[in-house]
Image 1 (cartoon, each protein chain N blue to C red):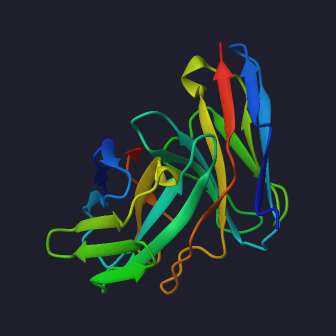
Image 2: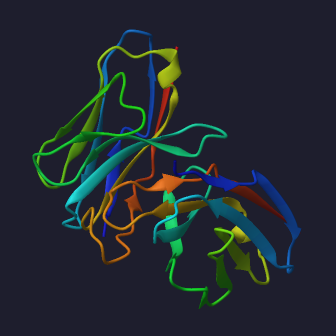
Length: 117
Length: 111
């Protein structure tokens, strides 16, 4: 099973350029997430999609947009990249969200390392 | 507000036990998770516990929860060099989508 697949794995951008990070999951999960990982700061939630057709802002949404294209795919777009967006980006998915029962564990992709010069 | 705290580094000798600690602040019942991140890879779930439990054991892993102090620990018995990684503690209150991650503890196992 592929699980959660992210592309690209590495990308270098110049300030002001745009790009889209792609994410797809094959586990029939309802919820999908985008996180960024920075040294000493753990993982911070950028955007979240509880189900197909819905998206919500997380902790650090500024400078990003997302699209939940269908149940499988959730993309993250940087319209005008800035050096502060240099980070490792992780996509994750879970079966359901907001439930009162069930552990609802996250399954992560391998990450996309983005450098903005 | 919710917060999850971990120490940044831990170094142990091969064959010893490792204990990675985490404190959380959410006052409601919550799920608590341990994830492992190897170099260049994503996070993989190791184990989880609900806050009405005191302990959970799975092979070399033991999770202990002190609800009064909101303290969670992960013990790895007979630590191996393959256990070298970053370990993240996370919590998720039921009824929310919000997973709150700690900063991660980098475990280094010395041969």
